[in-house]
Image (cartoon, rainbow, N blue to C red; front, side, top):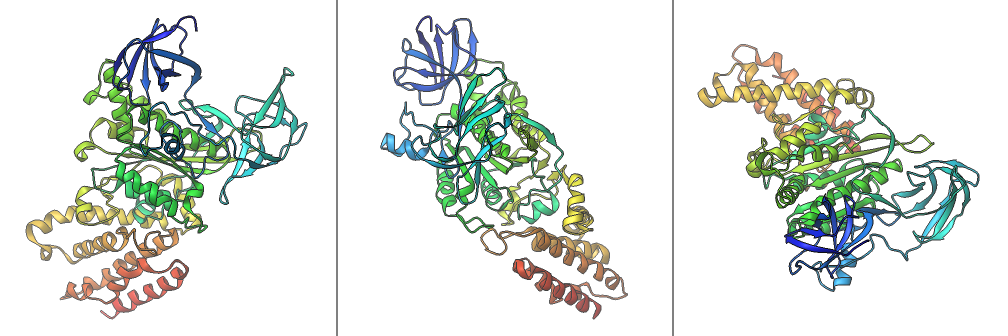
Length: 586
């Protein structure tokens, strides 16, 4: 650098420095004698504005700023799975050891991945192979659940001159590639990638398979596609974090990235202590073996929240590029937007709606657009998917505020959490009248082929019954249930069964916490069979509706969600038979 850069102003996480003519946008810098990590976010000639990812108290004008020449990047190599990081990919375990305190002290520099751990690399490429960015050079058994595929860096192509199997650290050379100009490049398992730039792919595909979550209200009424993006907005206490944890635990993705962005410390502690003990329902092994967590609590420096979201999605894209199905949970994107608002205010930018910066919409879109089902880069054709589910915490549960509105503009699934349902102890507290999905048409073919021909029509019918119920509720409130015709009374009764026996799900019950698609289909079908069988019966003259309500089979339907998965077919066949015989006897 030509001359020393010095701090001229400090405003919370924003530091202004002079003598920064050689700096580049988004370059990482070391601020003050304590070498705090910061990132250049604005340039004016000699002057640069820096957002600092650590606490800036005690720092004043005149202190030095050192340029590193690098942009903020994540380290990608074996060892990511099972890790718990802070917002800028520093392992919390190492920080605690280094700081000798449970709190993050300033200026700590720890590597994101261990430089001494050895990994068993098995080469799959051979000498003389023509390779390009994204091609697989070999594999490493990262955990017992996930095989790590070591890929050619995205911007490199050429001929493999040398490749070797064996035990290596992530920095040791495993291959040598000669490019078209005859220059040789040494390749190690460790790659770095700037967090703000999406990783390259061959192309995006149209999502056609569902991301199965095991939650009946989501899978049946508002499904999300594999490679889709969804939003869970809801007021405090409605169950956003619990819903996201349940998705992380049960959804059929192979790798989970969980970002706690600006969440309350005690909530994040719960996640961090609970996750390592959770069992993967598919393999029975610890769930952590296929999970990466990024913890950035509300008492950590505000600027690091912005980085944590990008750190998480870049790691998720890396596993997607290997050909895995990845699910990313961001909890909550509202705190990320608040961090943007704070930095924007300190930069004295023109505020947009509710004080958020004018670029809130484009940043939100840029984040969710990184989701998708893709054809991975490289010459062998493989598909990977990245599904992104973001929680939004609108103040006072007001869905018309900017963060929720901008999120809904770019996501195709809206799972609206309702405080009233949560107070009634109806969980998951997802409002079936406000929520929607735009993936239903894409997935219809898959459901018809894999589950049942009438899966989609049953889904539509259930939604119509719930909508009819909301219209009839007004009449019932004014003149009572007896004023309704028998057919309307049946609609109300069927809707109650759908709500209480189908949509309500006990997340703490080992059987009911996860429901397979086949079980969901059979349970809803039984409720609709009850309605179909009852229709001709209730129109008889002098028929007392109470008789239908008092049928013993209704209790059996209410208990049907607790049928074990291996007995689904048999149990539901028996239940349908009972429904038919009991209603026929009327």
